[in-house]
Image (tube, rainbow, N blue to C red; front, side, top):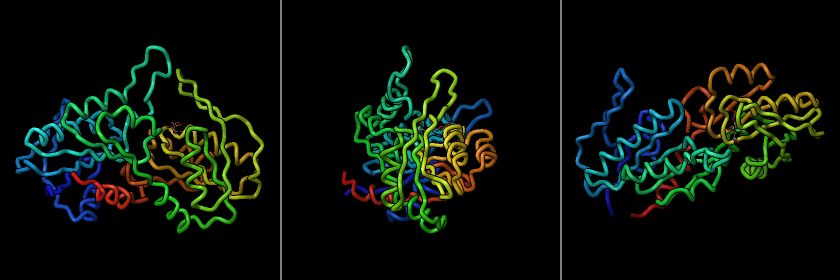
Length: 296
Ligand code: R5P
């Protein structure tokens, strides 16, 4: 069997090292540089021919820089004869997986094409926004679930009495249902609409049985926090005892965290697919356990 190596990218240094440790794989050394004008460069002069390399690199903001660093590393290593698999814990552009408005490009399709052109032979991600997105890849593509890890975290740290788990929209409902089942909690789905031109989010009014109960709002991504905020405001208006916001990919763009806090959300937690103070739930084990199943 080919030797397995892990190359942690600059966006996922700690996660990449944790995955390598769990796999018992050696780390590959590479040097990433960003020039003052924004151009990126990758250098690696190690012998990788015939080896399997897992590049672990998330693509949270700065999205395009992180994406390009992944592509550069993949290109260099595949040209040197490595079999390259990309482990992209947060896969940017996964929300643009179809033409929603006339004339829009299917960005995820282009990302899939670029990855393949750069020599990536396999993609592993965590909780891709929609499973349909995987079909845009012509290489084997798999999405690992962070839900069990988030449930463990919630059981250990939130200690909620008769919680209600809420999905802010229909798109997130399957993932949220899986969370609620494992968490052994009641589960409700809200109806959200987003103006695709302005980005403004509205959550449809609904009568919810949340009075006096703690609520967990669960979503795959928190970006501006608009979705979480709208859902939190609605449940608090209806007398929820508290609101915790849990997500897989906490991007928290701009002042998203402050706005959630102002809306009355007491806990905001994501996974380490996105590095930062709120990326506390570790997904190295679910990633490593999927990578262990891959036989080249
Ligand atoms: C979209 O459907 C996703 O599941 C999230 O709800 C969305 O990306 C959250 O974005 P924001 O925090 O900007 O509302």
